[in-house]
Length: 492
Ligand code: HEM
Image: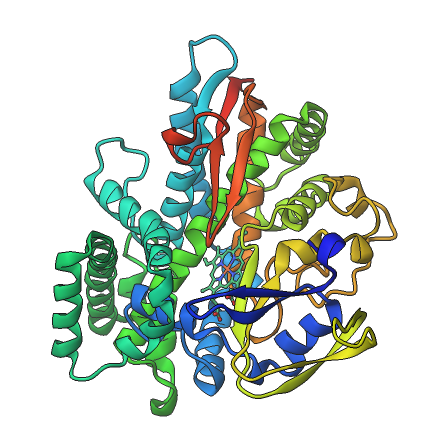
């Protein structure tokens, strides 16, 4: 995109074909996400959509001071120290993936075609279920009703929400409408005539009832027996929900979060942690399947580390996983070239000047513009993937998948303000992804187990990764079969 249109492009869209901006310019991103972030809140559309999906005012839909307050809780849950304690839970789930995949291909000729997206969706849901809310969806049991229902709800709710696109600008004011009974009645009436709304509501209720049931039960355990009782719960009290309940209980009155805010935040953690990681890992394996040389080198690195490991047999601990240079370089490069969140959506709350690294030319006068005046109310899309692949920022080979660039002692230097290796994948500023350490551990750990057990080869047809609000992979020529990532799998 920047190669063709530059680092600032004007778009037309929305209900009234208003002007919007698509920005990948480093100084502009720094200004919008960090320096002047208070004037560039989350778009009303996304704030409303997330507020409805998570049934409340959690981090994904609040702004300003309230957002800062809630992020304090969330950031405390995701420190490296806390996340490293989740390692055994991650292994517990990943070993189930390993067994299930082994059972699917064992005793059959090499190169069995398996839809790895399905397996990885189950894995990431089970990991965020176990480590996030201390709950198993029995995701690897084909007959599990809990999995089937919850999985259908969590994977369809966002695409269904996206189909209400023209109504997104009104969702934020609709969800604040009082009295509540009127709002609910209106939603019910609309859902009678509009099946998408009915399905959207049903998906939300399925997820909400799981969170509510778990939260009530866990809170009761804590209130009756304190941390000792939480330690007896299935995840041993290490899950994020248990930590959030304890932190909220210990907070002083002015900082306590009401139950519906805690619930909205748990929902945003499960949602944030599920789709991003599964689609990213599926794409990762699909790319690796085309690079058997990289697979072999990674395998050798993992075998050597395992031989020297101090943790349980065949399980590397958090520090050992983090220390693997090739695995780190490959993951970093995948996250740069193929970020699962390709853009974020902001708006301006006043007319505001934003500096540019790469000046643009005025269409009217031809003069060079080094500072862009963004008018109040303008929709601003920040192109995370496009910035990560800009040749002006990363060099002429920016779009190529080259893990070795991270192994070079002179690491790539980007001008971007991204919080992770100067790339925009996890964003930066006040809304930087809180789950990035969790995601990195999960990705590396799953890969380490899979690569030591299986080898991966590509199928003959190409897979197209279509970009929408979410990225959807389909096999070219077989689009009607729906989203999938078939890969040939062989047991080593
Ligand atoms: C490769 C995996 C992931 C990527 C690339 C990613 C990326 C992002 C990005 C770009 C945002 C900012 C969205 C915006 O401002 O509109 C975000 C927000 C968020 N992410 Fe992640 N994420 C990943 C995994 C996770 C995981 C595993 C969790 C939790 C376990 C998580 C939880 C969240 C939450 C709760 C937010 C909302 C934060 C806020 O609005 O303050 N993410 N993520």
